[in-house]
Length: 259
Image (cartoon, rainbow, N blue to C red; front, top):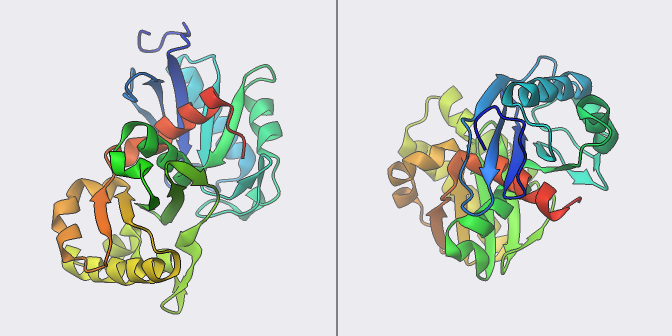
């Protein structure tokens, strides 16, 4: 499919990853998991209310020239296509019927699936990433504005875990060890890795995963901090890095995944 073309193909999907700072989208080749267009990014509106975000998604799809099915991620627990939490977006998302919201803004006849952002990243890693994501018990963590999580067993997802909000260090794990915290507190990679290591030790104690997969943009610098970790489990960087949310969203709408 040519960039910006409205021509649709069953081998190409489209995913949109809604984050606290940016809304990103691209067309995805299902055979490879690679983007077939340039990624489009639009700043998340302030305040990030449901209608404001949905209108921005409509703008992104218009810019991409995409008229077909679309998968969307949100930083929230999504059950029965209803948002039950709101992380790094406006609290008015809680209780929002996301199916109705996005159909109203993107078109009633469009096929739409909405799911948790870290769950989408986990699905993408299972499908196209490190083979270890498909074997045994795995916790995938995405480090960014917060910490997202996906629990996997032999490649099967247990959705909506939200381990970034697990109580830790007089707060939550994501207020202690997200990559945004590293930037804000100007921590060295070694200092930040010590915080991440403590979180991983706690998750290892509670869930006994064989492997941790770490994603988000900071995974591009994995060699600077993974060697400082001491947790008794394999820790590997995600292969799809910060592409994973978009790719997982596209997979979810293809497969009719509606948590």
